[in-house]
Picture 1: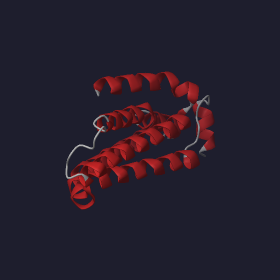
Picture 2: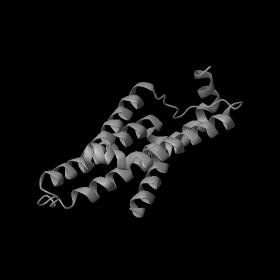
Picture 3: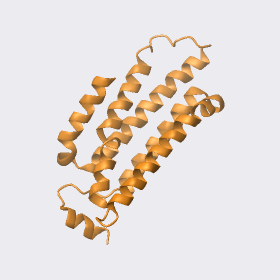
Length: 162
């Protein structure tokens, strides 16, 4: 998994200026959705078969998880941090970055803290399918609301948000 993480971050750093931030976020969210839906499907089949591994699908959970890690670190891992530096005006950059970072880690804490409760209510398949749906919403959000900043100077970007 560490190798997948390093490879995806390395690839992302080469393509972030070539493809653009928006396309990386879209591709990232699609990959995350497919990975989570694949993981949810595996656990759904496992739950239906009385906790016995579904025949011939032993490769699916690791592959789905690797896809998720790769996709996240290809776009949604690094790009939002880059966006903060580009989109926030200089007079609020420090406060805005601190607020965004705090909110990000607060949500990560909530997800970690509540995962067991979600698992008990939805089952593992339901948890992963829910995360897949959230990732699909991220695709729509990226398409509809994320501005493309590729090839623009900081001044050009700032003028768009005034």
